[in-house]
Length: 164
Image (cartoon, rainbow, N blue to C red; front, side, top):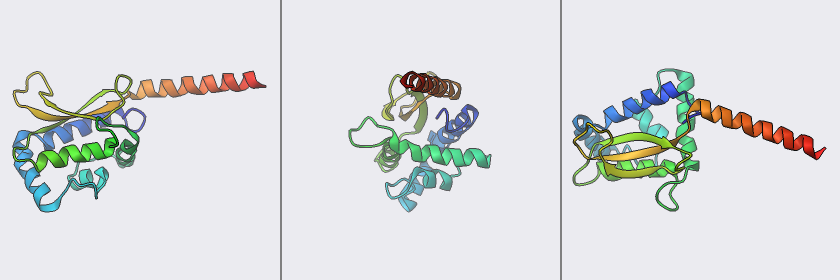
């Protein structure tokens, strides 16, 4: 999420998402999916999360959050031919419409190690005894992303000077 939204906003959103899809909230989410099709490839993640109230409080950060969700369309996923945005939608939809829905946890992993949005099943934290659907989003910390951009800009300037 790095450059697109503040690291502190990322943490806040992760807490909101993980609370909304924990075991206790799951029956309500299953019913909302059944009744309204909250997660569907006909709706953008921005619409689904806004409907559920999973947004930053700060309006500037909210716009950035929405931009990030749209940017997920450029991310690859662990399914060939499916972008990161659609993979997240499919993970929620498939789970909430399954015979035995599981809690869903959203986690982040290093984009440098794996640039794909991945979905698996397991225990998202060491103290959890429940199996969850784990949606993992590739992320670069904001400071690191800014450093990478600055280094790339310096390299372009050096290369440009060398061509003169």
